[in-house]
Length: 460
Image (cartoon, rainbow, N blue to C red; front, side, top):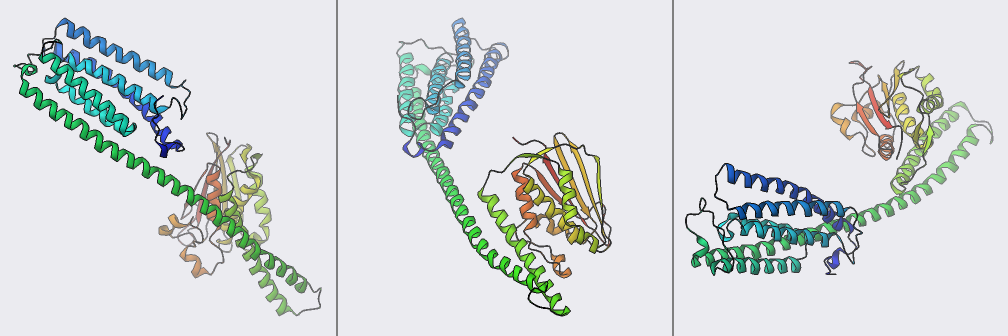
């Protein structure tokens, strides 16, 4: 078996995949070529009134039928072939197609005038295709055989060894008997064929090599990303330990286990505890993002989104009471369906989204949560009438550590990691998330924000 796969592509599966796809593409084009060939024959006979002999008509129709039959055979057998890099592979399949097409084209060219017909220029088209797929040495060998064969047919007709089929309606004189015309045409044809093969093969090889280099670069970037995330997790985890330890000590002092403290000191300690909790939340979010980037696998179980939302609301009940917020859950378009997902990650999604709605709502504000299931998907919208997001900043809101400009003036604390984490999780579960401001329950003074999440009910 001829070795067709270049050494640099032995372990490059994407290269063979692209060749396999192109093979199918060529099969589809060949069906169109058959229809076009039939149309050309019919138009030539009945519209252009070309004086074809019975032999020409039968030969052209027979060639067309043969092309159709071997194309159907190639199409059928393609799915059952056992590809092997070292034996029969997609490149061999491409070689078979190109050889069959060149033989069929040679018959078409011969029966339509050979050196007189413009159809022989289609050889160049086949050489371009072959140069894009086959190694240069192989396509050059094919080009050499093609040039020798075509020259042999032309000279055979000139010396009357092979019958020449002249079409008087196209060419008044029989150029196949004009030696100067033959030599000139053959020289131009040979030059064009080899120049085309040389240039196209070189360009194709460079493109494949660049594509492979790009793939290797991406793999290196992925490896560096894994190293970076692992390093971040290690460092951040070490930072977390002393904060947790200091939090425990501060709790002991605040609760009076080490002696009575006055009210001012207690208030200061409570502020320290709150700051520590914010720092821990920031650290936990960084750890979660790093884990998501490192681990593609997650648990899939049947969960109830509505129950998760109710649980999150219960967890944030103190903050909701402090701000005197009203929360309404509208589930008119929602049936209590169970969705495939990771319970912990989904709790993280709605903890961030609902937490933001609570944090960025003004006193006596309103939060509306709407659930709807349709077309094997669930849509969850969380709307508030809080401070909202400036229009020109919505597209940047999912960036890590990005915080809207109006939050700085309000002096509302946050890390800017919550929504980045939410988007990461939603994407992992093949969902969609969009943010709109002003919200559907907002007004000019309190525009608010609507976060819309669409999740598939089932996961493959």
